[in-house]
Length: 77
Image (cartoon, rainbow, N blue to C red; front, side):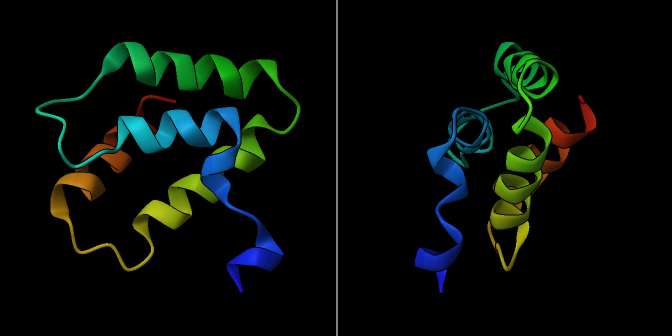
């Protein structure tokens, strides 16, 4: 089914969200979170693409670290 919807991590903001929510990070990358905010504010599809990437990261994810980083990234916007 994903092939019909596309990969939300293939967009610039999706790639940043994927990196910002990587479970191997020791702490939040605030510079990357701010870059995500900039992309969202500067591009027409940024908000829509960001929501898709965040939903994909949270949907069924059992890695608590990735979930925490995703929610932190989301809160910074």
